[in-house]
Image 1 (tube, rainbow, N blue to C red):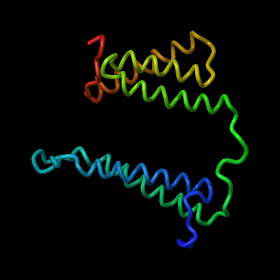
Image 2 (tube, helix red, strand yellow; image 1 turned 60 degrees about the vertical axis):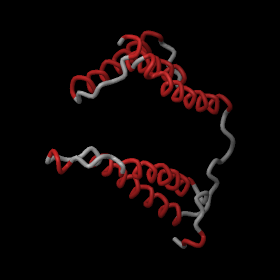
Image 3 (tube, one colour; image 1 turned 90 degrees about the vertical axis):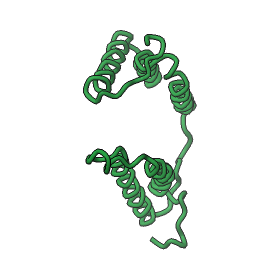
Length: 160
């Protein structure tokens, strides 16, 4: 790949690699600011696994960019997207913002149940019983994983 002809918009691979790199570098910066507890507790510090994931993401981003550099330039978005798919994507981003803003107030259980149900509905699930069962099971599994297995406290919110 000739760096002089590099463009992050060359094709899908270079765009994906550039976006991944753009997200991963601030992530690694945030991880670098974690406190170093390895000397006090003689164990792995809280930054070890996030660092590993971050550097793996950097490697994958560089590989994507290199792969895109070998490939021919191609349109990133061939054709036009259907309007309902664009609206779904916007709705999903809006839902993520609402989840972020309401998590402390409503709590993990309520927010995760509603999030799972609404996302399933947006993605096309029409059977109410299946939608409710999957939402309840997903919430229960995540709650058990974080609270019972990992012992990580979750926001309690209204059910406090």
